[in-house]
Image (cartoon, rainbow, N blue to C red):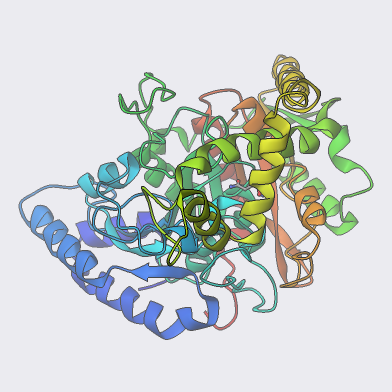
Length: 483
Ligand code: GLN
């Protein structure tokens, strides 16, 4: 049962081959048996899951249908879940039970999805390895000595290990696409504003975006359908109709113009990954796509700009965690200043403290123009590069990451080495564009992802290309040994 995709589960439930309750029980038992090796969950919500599953079965018995009705999923632990711990991977929020559901959580619950639990993540979504969680590192099911990617590493490891078919995740600078690449999944970061951020604990508000992690493009379409849409509670959410994503999967790729940026194939890229990316290009050419070399000249400035803007916004967003209103409070403070300092010093981990300091510095009077304002100007140049490219092509294709998943601990003492691994993913966040990563092969037994980027609100086009690719390749069907 655990090998089924969301699409297969929907058919099985509709045909009464099994009930949501049976499926939920099977997966909960599998999680209990296998997750100790992976550490992909922070909290399990068995009682909630079984009651949601029974309710979904009852709705089906009453004639209701829907691709998510009775489908088991999990939420990254930064989506607020009413009455359930929402930790953001931090000691700061270890005791925080959200008083309300995030819009994404509420929408998926209304569609009948069953929440099995809350998945592990880098603390406050800061990281590319899922090693900064207060709850410990997550392991990659393809090789337990390697990282699963971050910050949505728990969602990725759980789905890759067939503990469940799909999970929610968020992407501020690659945290859906990079763990998807490292664990052989399909992950989609929607256009900024497509999915509500209400109740999604903020890291860098102008970059954060929720989206689906699953094994196939077909399943990403199903989960995104349940997540997307206008939300009056989120002032950056876009009031545009949501298309039928599943209906977009079967378009022909004949004549589709794919741009491959020459800057992507520079010295930093593992040549074995470069070869797999070229193979995926050939595969899409066979399906009728036309390939064109393009240029994104300002890409080289994206990492420094991102690592100013994201910490700047984080330093502002995380000021609310002060030991007074939310979460952790230190023991026996001497006075108010001592309470603030010790609560934050003890509640936040090293990477979060580093980002807060970098961000506060970049925003301070005297340095604002030199760092923050400069970074914003680079952001505009990065966006302009994409706008020029999309005048010539329909899709941009390249590697999701320069290297496959590294060994646990290999980069944890060198933050800049880890930041450099985000080179291909962060530009889409700076520009607000949708991006997708899908399986493209293996290097030393570790999965490799190919990234597709599209113009604003063209999530359907990304899913279409990925689905057609997956109908003609079998990388996405490979299963890690032992799972
Ligand atoms: N690795 C990036 C960072 O640490 C991206 C994280 C994310 O997308 N949440 O900021």
